[in-house]
Image (cartoon, rainbow, N blue to C red; front, side, top):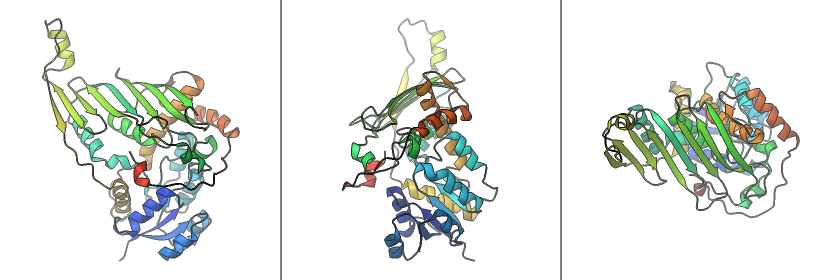
Length: 382
């Protein structure tokens, strides 16, 4: 019996074309693209010899697909995702799940027990972050006391926003830097370090771009165990910095954008602090570089896992439920900035939704500029 996953793709933007290529090139096993839906993609569908639709519901109802990949502007995720789930199909959603935590939770509530629902959080497959997770899981760091990630090499020039009608608008994207680029970093941050209990953020809106949403953020996290964290992000800084430190009582993990270093104390900091008689002493430590081969196809790994979950019941690397935490952090940072206060987690989703609705009412999609641009998708990943 042939149980190849028949995949419909809704959307034909840059990332959707990347996903389609992963499948038709054979990098995703036991899967075939059987239908495509977009406003202007008939020629692509004809070239691939697959069915073409201009209406998402028509593709969903066509009977041609067992699963659907949604790679459309964020503001359409809720309606299209809900339609896919209501039709009983499996769903792969591009990040983020939705504009807000409340809408994402409503969509998740429609998933049935026999449906596979995943989100494209591909950086969970990065061997670097998996190596960091292994070190933490082994207890090498001891209790985590401080975390810090400066991720400012998401630079985007003005033309990136000009050629889109939905990006960098409250109406189309529900945010900017946090909902688009840094959603990956926020996912990895909480995946490795856990969710904070409090967030106080300082977002700057349209600081270096002609946009209405955030393009720079500095956030302070407080954890229930007394640990602290700082997250800094920007799409307006070049060349930018990628520095991630996780400090524990026993050791420290540091990634400087190139090298992952583990520094281990011979004696735990807390123990040394209370027992040493050396007035200017500090624990002896050893330091070594952790060699990690990062040459993996992240998107193909996520898609293969999605297919295997459908066919064989394999556990998902990035189930849709995993997409809630990063969205909650992004929403909390925006709410903190809007109201200039500390926000406690879990986030009050209704409270955030009300604040977002105020921005949505005053926002609209932009007029897309007719500009010839060079597009190198490989250069978009960090």
